[in-house]
Image 1: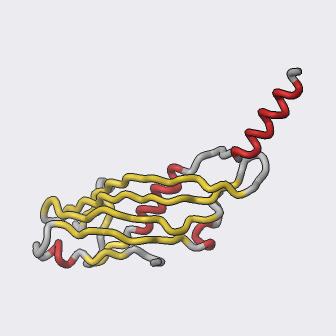
Image 2: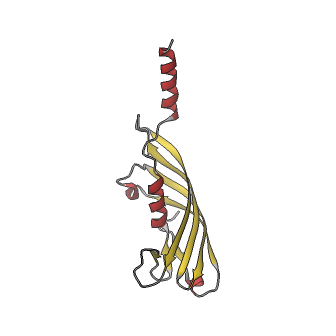
Image 3: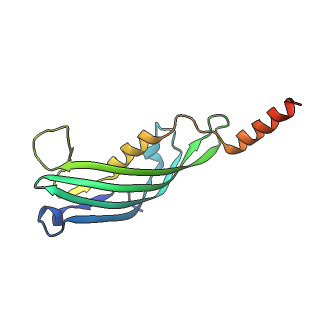
Length: 145
């Protein structure tokens, strides 16, 4: 497991390869989850690649799968919620400040912040326990009689 997910792009910059494969597990520590509804985010599988599309432009294409623990909206109990993301980002090492691309500094790219930004976007506003739903349906059916 890694704290950062740094990819060395030296081989891409030097044109020794056309793509760098990514296949690793990543965790987010409890401190990284502060101020979110996410209670745990562990053992995420990150697969894909980083490729060079032009002299200063790189494409990041990765899939992130795993699960996150979220609180039930009704009971606050932990609920394991599946996570599956496809992330496609354009990175650049051009010195000019352009908002079209994510900036690369040097020959190392930490893609963990990119993964985090995409995870935060898919966290549902409301999650309910299936156990609670089943009990609620049973109670409602009994009161209909």
